[in-house]
Amino acid sequence: MEYKIIESGSKGNCLIIDDMMFDCGVNYKAIRQELYEIRYLFITHTHTDHLKLSTFNRIVRDFPRITTVGNWDVGYKVPLNETVGDYTVLELPDRKIQCFPCVHDVPTTGFAVTIGDESFIYATDTASLEHAPDMKFNYFFIESNHDENIIKQIRNTAVKQYGYDAWKGAMRHLSTQQSKAFYYMHRKDKDSLYIELHKSERFY
Image (cartoon, rainbow, N blue to C red):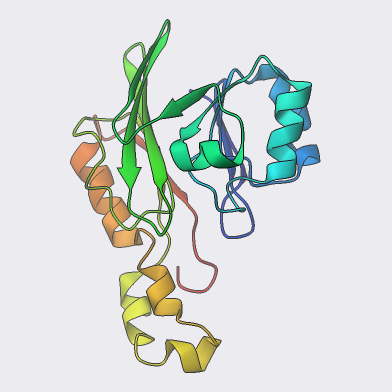
């Protein structure tokens, strides 16, 4: 599989894997040329760094053939071709999409995709991958937001140091230790590819 990270982090998120785009929290100009090859757009949740409304609306207007997929909360914000539940399975002609709930402060969906004999998982903005399918993957596009050891050091001083509760915010995201543990427990073999997403600039 071919992939391209357009942006990943608090400033915006958009990832392309073959003919699929995951999230569109970036400016339309940054992805316009990529959209000619895209067949599916998956939106994980409604935070603006994952769903930029102006970008989504331009995609739907300019590329109506692209199938849009998201959960019910996303569906309140934008029109979707497929509205999925926590454990919806989409059996498409050439691929299988398994949805699963992520643990965040808004309803968030992760996706496990199987095409032929290859599979990958995409999950970001989640405190846990406990609801992910118990299967083996060739590719892992998963959050690796912060180092637990660094976060522990600022637990009692976060508000004073940063003006907001950075520790509490980090607890809504998957740590590097959790991310790597999931990878090692679910990789198909030693060649399975691990791509870390949504890294904190401050605590990674």
